[in-house]
Length: 172
Image 1: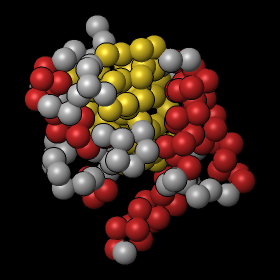
Image 2: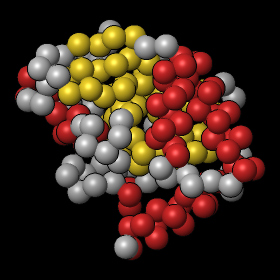
Image 3: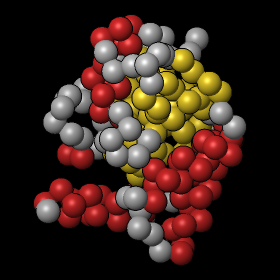
Image 4: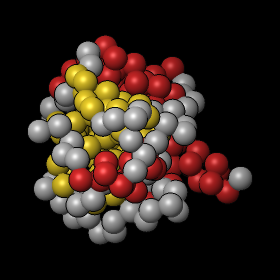
């Protein structure tokens, strides 16, 4: 109950800023590059953040995205992270989104490039759950999601839920 109220308050605050959206997604960073993991509940967002080694966890559940010019940046909302793996605190670097991953559980690890339309649909799906939004805000969420999908490469990420996955590079 408290977490739902907190999420609503943060969502309402974010929607008042013209260049920010809140997504139901996980995010990690390495070398100031951000990696966004999209999928519905139980798709493996928290699992991926636990398994990846050498990456700083920004969030395993909800992440803020801010547009600055033609780039999109990730920002933590520590109060809205799950307790399964604590996010790194005090990440001072500006983390831009380098790649997007649409999560798929599998028996082997592989990556497949996806279309901008598919990435866009998944971004909208990740925002609709959190942003029960009013008409004026729909356009903002749509515009930011479309900009992200058009400017950042997206992949289906098939992953195996075991320790061997943790050392895999996220598409070189």
